[in-house]
Length: 154
Image (cartoon, rainbow, N blue to C red):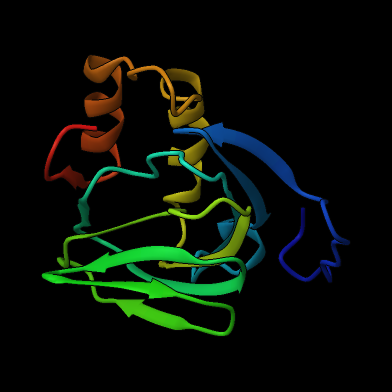
């Protein structure tokens, strides 16, 4: 895709991959933004563990809750985020999220600079389900590749 192209995606469009029981739909890739940022829509499954607490060494990350309730941990602070909640996670900050409720939740995840969205694709191969442990050796190799520090194992 040429950088000069306009991108329009409808609901449900984009590449969707399962990661830790949730569904990640890649909407905007680094190639669309000259590497500046990426956008992923996450369908947070009720009861799925979500990502383990982790630190991005290279990216700022932002969450925007579209529907449902998402439990977000940022550093030492944990909160239940409802629709309309925005959280900015500076690089180097321990964070995670999960859907603690009985209803599905959706949130947008923005990463800047772009590139980490490709980690979701790779993680889908080793940690697709939330009810089975991931292949930790391969997951940690992916984490190292993308300068992600997993703080506690899933």
